[in-house]
Image (cartoon, rainbow, N blue to C red; front, side, top):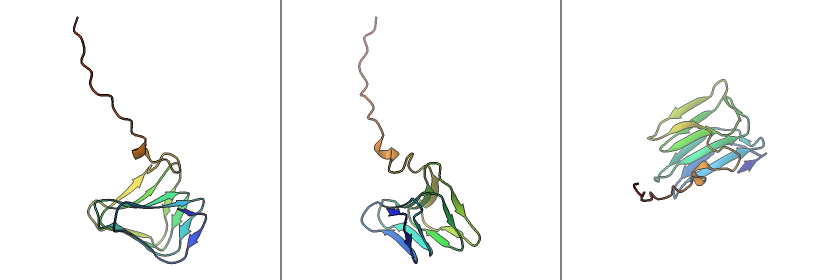
Length: 120
């Protein structure tokens, strides 16, 4: 989580051993370009959970790289920003999490098993 802080420089968000997520919250941001990818079967995600404007940047989404926004926040791609979807299963996404920290994948309910019914 990058909470209200600025990372000066490029962002290399490469997953090599599982799912990795960087959440930008409360004004968290970075100043350089971003490379987001995963060498495993999992995703690498940059999630804007705060209003975010990216200007003059190159965002490269490699294999299973995800750039997204959650909740009611806005992700603005400003002047000079390029997003490259260069890998399989790379994507732009919205509503990654319904509320900050609320991962809908963890909210799934187990479906009850089918029960036999009696016929009249």
